[in-house]
Amino acid sequence: MARRLTYPLWSLFLALALPAGLYAQEASPKLSDPEVAHVAVTANSIDVDLAKLAQSRTGNPDVKQFATTMITDHSAVNAQATALATKLGVTPKDNAVSQSLLKGAAEARAAIEPLKGKAFDKAYIDREVAYHGAVIDALDKVLVPNTSNAELKKLLVDVRPAFEAHLAHAKKLQGSLGAGK
Amino acid sequence: MKRGIRRIAGLPIAALAAIGVLAVAGAAVPSRSADPVTRRHVVEIRGMAFHPEVLEVRRGDTVVWINRDIVPHTATATRKTGWDTGTLLQGKSGQYVASHRGEDPYLCKLHPVMLGKLIVR
Image 1 (cartoon, one colour):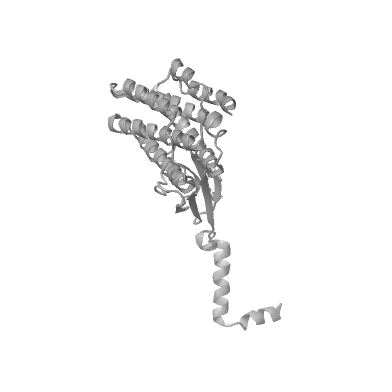
Image 2 (cartoon, chains in turn orange, yellow):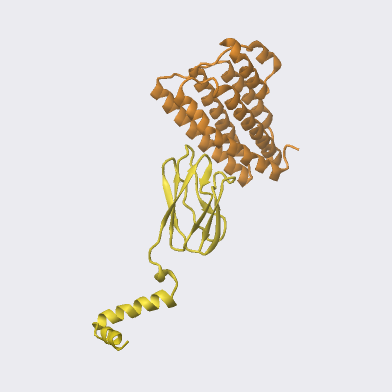
């Protein structure tokens, strides 16, 4: 079982561009449903937190609207995930993947926070493009395939189009800001 | 022929008046009053898309958008028609009575990559 999970977890860590030392350490852990739930909630919370920073800092109305949508949508997904976990009697369990996500988020925030004006907007939107791409990849390769409970799996599948729309929205903004080039 | 005329002539005045009104309405005024029967159309919002994406309706028809997604959406006109369902939470619906003929594109204000279009005849 642990062996079967090695590849998807590697791909998750690679997708999220974590330091080599970190994923080498965690090459063969496996994710249980409580851990998958924790990763999902953590991933949503990370995006809400960064969006709150962007909402308070950007002067660009389109970026502000995007940030507001991120807060609304990822909060809605988390509310649904929490309600489902409660219904299923699943207690989200902290794990190495969640910790790595948090570490990456702290590093991204540290890089973005000192910036101002258009540089801030570009860095925020660049991060959103990369982050949503990585989360979609993680959903497909790690979270969905390793989830046992059918309802939890369905929720993960159901939220994928929202993340795709966020990615498309962020890419559109990236184009208008001249970012990521 | 004469018999026919006589039969019509024998109808009560009220009935003749009614026939006259119907004839005028049907032939000369092909507008809203010509077709008082309006339809109700439903557009489902699911998987971050409008279903159907393009909907043909007649002026006066009601279009209802119902949100089946977890996240909130709107249906908001992008041209001067200016209608907006406002924010629709999961399971909620909003409506618009089509009042301007022609193409009436719209989007979700919260997710501007979600596009739809009404074609109002």
